[in-house]
Image (cartoon, rainbow, N blue to C red; front, side, top):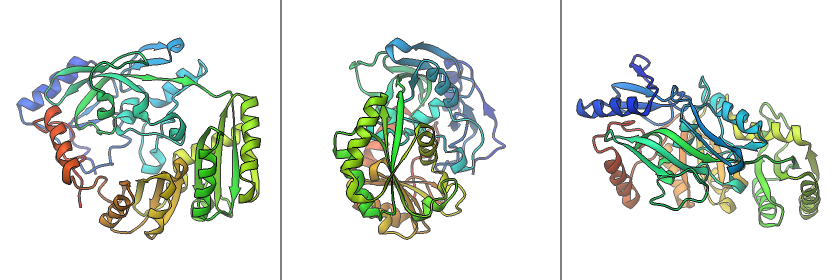
Length: 390
């Protein structure tokens, strides 16, 4: 658990961030980097001498709705950004999850934290991950140097794509001080088709039919009986859900075609727009698993074989991303969970109850070490957070 007695610094300018990092490097001090701290418990941190929060780097730098581009400082809250773009008929298309209930956290997640962890919701299967919407940034490296990458336009091919590197680095390489993302028009209409009582394998087949057809599905999830029975859904059987979004006429036509394609899988019911938004909010936040005390795993796998990992382990699962993401509650040893995921061509992250990251091994581990040494040779930033455990 984080040490709440450590001094928390809240810089308000990039120059202040640079000075703090440079001083820490010179004095051999270590910095824990957070946004609002809502994901602070994910990852086993080494001893830090000071906490640096980006929460006061919270300025809207530039918003050009006509260009679908938004530039802000990393401490801007996701809830405020969603309201800002919604007022212009737009959205953060990667549907960032908050997970505050899931992790028992307080506060409001920030954009910098979401990008640093590369968090994406159910729409990832159509709109892409958070990193795919990350156009550019300014940051302070562990060397105490301010640097920039990318740009403020959607079409930008200059230099290395460091955005992909920063997204998912969990604050171990640099501290973001400004970020640019693309936004997209919000759908005018949405509906969700629901199938009931399907076993996991059969549900995977149904989601495969939907994803491989001309239906433009923007959400595909399967809740087995345990997950479906939990609050807040409280269904009495397994539920498989497929979301369609867009213009009203298009959604209606695609829903009819999809229902026809799925008629062999049993009874189909339809959720209206309000019900659909509520349901997918529950899936995004994994609300069915929020109160369970067992270790919680986020296992990423090829969608066609997504059901195989939970079936090889004891516990209860919930499937998102058309089976490509399996949320798993299990008491199985961490090494076994990671081994099963690896054998199936995926990887596993533990959000609570065990070490979040696995050990760095082989060529990939060596590459991670070289990247860390390039950006933070003294190990100033988030020491040990992604080093993992067996």
